[in-house]
Amino acid sequence: MRAVLVGLAVLLGFGFLGGWVLPNVAGPAFLQVRALVAPRLSPTGPTVVIGGRAPVQASAIDIGLEVSNRYPLAVTVGTGPSSYQAAVYGRDPDGRLTMVWQLGANDPTLEEGSDSPAGAGPGNGAAVVPSGTSRHDLTGSSTPFSLSDSTGQPLASGVYYMRVWAYGIGSGLVPISVDGGVDPLGPPPDMPAPPDAAPSF
Image (cartoon, rainbow, N blue to C red; front, side, top):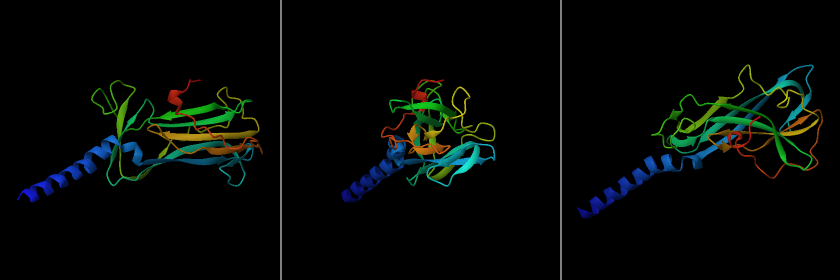
């Protein structure tokens, strides 16, 4: 009888660990984020090469992201003022990444409040991410990346780097070459932080 109780306790412990502790405490470890980038074709726009694809003429770029939860259950993750974010960076003369464009969007399922697992205050909350893969459009029909900087000036010839985040978890960098631009320094070794943590324009 004791062996049965011990076995039951072990099973309950594993169930608690796998069904509550891991999804609620280690949620970010199960998520992968990938950038989705598509040019808006235009005969009058600059020539762009996105992530090594074929060059096209484009007036703007639409940006989305894909979130993959590899855990078999939904997981809980903390989130800041913007659940989904995107930013584009250029290189300054010293080779450092300088933000030229950014965008944030909220998750409509976001839970906010002092009882949230992510903490108190209107800027913090928690989101429940279902198992599997979901896609989210960041730019929509009216807010694409218009291939211009924060002042509205068209981007100069060169290579720019885009990154997206979901719940603070970042994707890899996506290079965007404008009008045949090259980056003699090669891909940057540093990975920029979410824009919420950077100075705003």
